[in-house]
Length: 108
Figure (cartoon, rainbow, N blue to C red):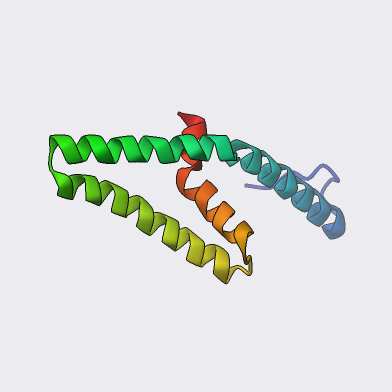
């Protein structure tokens, strides 16, 4: 199958590269906007995890509640390590890991 270029059969490689880069920037901007989380949503997510841990602990047993809480604690620590390895330090690293771990509540 022949690819059709807006510039015709003698496409300028520089123009094609610029179009590709522009499309990638637009796609990444849209993706960032889609997965954006804020602190109130992350606080809500943390609250939901605490409630789920308590409910699991009361209905199934303390081990189940600890398992739910431990899974999210491990996810937070893994996110913190990744953020730290990417060069982010201090409170900003904790904020980013916190948003990653509990920011999903903005989609609930």
